[in-house]
Image: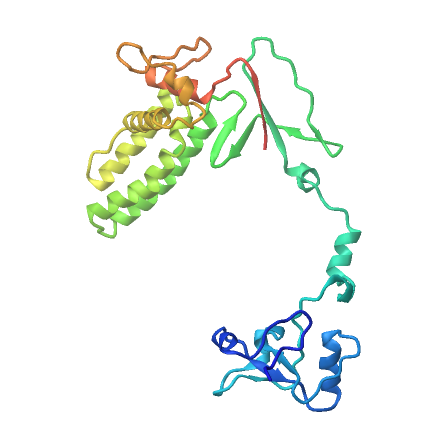
Length: 315
């Protein structure tokens, strides 16, 4: 007589097919409370097991088996828990309630505005209109946001006039402090190659950080170039001046935008191409001052696309 699994809706029987699938069969406990627990777990009305009643391994979890020997055995005290009961045999389970879940239900869910720290929020208004009017104060959660004239964001000092003087002073100060370490490194008789690597990774990274996005005056350019010449004398080589590095980086940035159709500025730059030579035409801006070369005008037009609008920065 073939051996079948006694679980509800299970059609597994002892055969070569089930053995190939790795399914094993296990006899009900002989007597006692465990046997009654197994019978109750099947949820079959009036079911009473006998000495040959079996359950297959599909109704036990993986942790219930002892596979150390030649035969697969059930561990002591395990219960069948894996069943696929229909709806009328399923027992309603009460939802688990923990201290954390109850606290989460009692407390209101915060939104983005409530998470914002208004005390640390700053507003900076950049206005290039001819007729300027004071903007209305920004109010969040009943508190007015402080309006500032300059702010440091992502390592760059911004001001509401976009003259970049504060940022240039900060860059020069940082470059001078790092030049000290370059001189200190030379006093240890470090080779020229290591000094050059230190300059490009430590000093130059501070001098040319975000240089493509910033404008700079001629006097500030002279200060940066003087610092670069000092670094070159420490290393013993001639370093590229600030204008050469900036022009090279600006050109690379322009080429990357023109070669990337998904960039937001691609269409604007592509419209400036000459229909004859395919070269990029010089952009014009009457309101831009202190800019002398064509590539700087191009850069300024890229940075400030909407020169006749008010730009609000809430930081």
